[in-house]
Every structure is written in structure tokens, then in C-alpha cells.
Length: 328
Image (cartoon, rainbow, N blue to C red; front, side, top):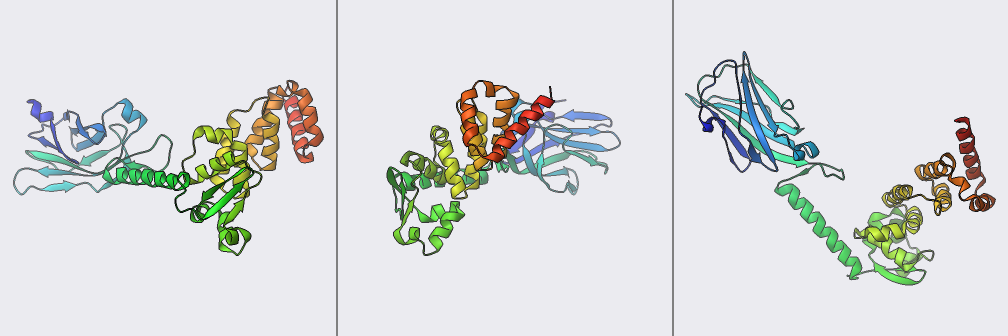
């Protein structure tokens, strides 16, 4: 059999495999062909029923980021009136191996025929999660538009473009935009919607926040905060996120504070966990102190902490101690 019998012709998003003849009890697999980021195979197996399969070639790319495909697949008889069999449109189906799409065709096919695959879309999921995104123009254009819009939003802050509100921190001021703040925080939205001081004077006073922490806070809202800024000002950001009801920032701080608990910060974080109702951080701090025995390493600091801590928090700590002792 010639090499062309296994070759799949492609153009843009269309792939065609021409089958000249197919004996009974036959299996045939195409050469790989590239559509999008992946190499693909078509295969056919003829017994009493003809089975047509479409699947991506096994690779690290397929394992790590399998395609989510939308396509129309047809079988076109070359002879006579070119009878066409069309499978119902496949939409957003993840394909990992040769069992993920199998089309059984019970109608007998005689002579030459063509397997025609029209790829409508191919999507992938970002490693960071979220909705699948098309690898083609629509998805790329959307990603590019989002990135450009975010960069422009950041410039509005850093370059002070048409600012209309002043944020007064404890040691400095910075300009911002009412619309952006109101869109991100229901508290800001309420401030600017009613005849409050902030609306009348076009200022917001955040006297318990340094200008550096305030810049990090606005950087988060405008989408251009640097990771180092976030880590440095997490506690201030947590306090402000709670104050202005910005739940995603509060949760980001919560998750980050859990990651690097140590003997120098555990008591402060435990206090903040209780104050801002952060159950994961509270549980992690108490386990660090009690189950991992770090309470003995900071005995003096812990005794001082008990003198000023909330009664309910103290009770929770001793409850953790009792549960740990019962486990031994």
C-alpha cells in the first residue's frame, strides 16, 4: 500500500483522509496531521461495523493540556452521487485518547470514500484554571484585548490620567478614579452614590494605611500589583479588603498568609484570623502551635498573648490542646 494511503490532507481547520479501498476485518491508522497545537490521528476499523476514531497523538502536550474540541465529521462516498454521512456536531469535547471519540457506522460503504473533519474550535484550560479558552483568533483576540485593557487601566493609576478622587493615606496621597473603585467595592459604590463627605470633597481618608500599602491596594484593584508588593503588605491589604468588602482580595490574603506561618508571625496571624473570621488561617495557626509543638518555642510570647487575646480565641486554643492530648 502506498504512503499516500495514510496521509491526511489539511488546510486551515479542515482535514481529509482519502480511503481508496478497505477490505473486511481491516484496521488502518493515518499518519499524524497537525491542526492547532496538536498532532492528530484518524483511524478506521472494519468488521461488521465501520468504526471511525479521531484523537490527538500521545505526547506531553496532550497529557498536560488535552484539547477541548468542537468539530463536524463526515464520511463522503466518492463514487456515484457522493452520498454523505454526517455525525451530529461535537461541541467542547475533551479528547485524550483513541476511545474518547468513536463513531460506529452501520451503513455499508463500498469503494472509495473520504473522511472529512472540520474543526470548529479548539480550546485549552489555563494552568491557573478558569474557563477554557480558544487557541484561535477569537480566544487570542480576547486575551490580547484583556491584557491591553488591563495595561491601560494600570496606566490610568500610575500616570494619574483623569483622576477624580484623592485617597489620603497616613503619610501621603494618591489619585484614583471613582468609577473603578465603585466597580470593585460595594462600600466605595455606596460612598459615591450618596451625599457623603467622600463624594462632596472628592477624598477618601484611609488614615490607618501607609502610602506604600495604599499604592499596593490600588495596584490590586487596577490589576497591576507586583507579587513582592502583595507579600509585603498582606496584613494591611487584608484589613482594607475587609473594610471595603473586596472579597477576592480578602481571600487572596487569606490563602497567602497560610503559606508561610512561622514562630515570628504565628501569634499575629492567629489574632488576625480571629478578627477577620479566616477559618483556614486560624486552624493552621493553632495546629502549628499545638500539634507541632511550636508553642514551647515561643512560651514567653504566648503567655503575653494570652493576657490580651479574645476570650473565645483562648477557649479555642485550649480546646485544640485538649484534642491533641487525647490523640496521644
